[in-house]
Image 1 (cartoon, rainbow, N blue to C red):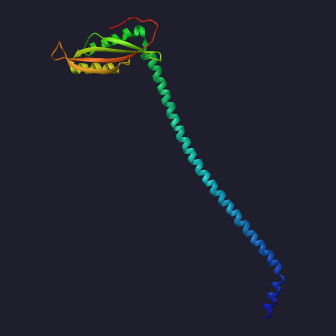
Image 2 (tube, one colour):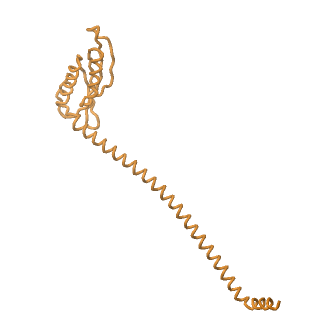
Image 3 (cartoon, one colour):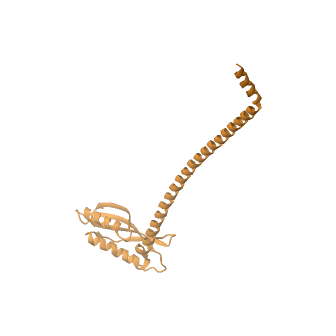
Length: 196
């Protein structure tokens, strides 16, 4: 029992040392908790920042893809406009005569007879003249279909605007087709007066 008492008295004598030790342990625990919490908060902030940056990267990649597609489309359209302007559209003179010759050639290849063609012109703001032509053509059904097909596929860029069918007045087996087409020429100062 005296040993226990001696131990207790020895501990009481060192009470001050134990209090300092306890204070150091409490301060150490508080510091550890604070640092751990700060690190955890920082890790959460970094994780949320990483998610935000990933989402922003995805948006930028989608925007880049859209812009790349738009650029490719603009390039293709610019090339199509250049080809149309330089290769398809001709000067008014001799372009108008050439257009009638092309229509006659297509009619001859498909066994279709073209009647008298009337036309009027409209000057567009882009430096083009749009020629609207109306013409009667006559032949059997399949020849007329081939003729319209070839008109639409011609390199001259004929637009078939309207067609109407009727029975031929001269041939019971034939069909008459009233055909309205349009095509474009570069507007020029001179007018050749060419016509069908």
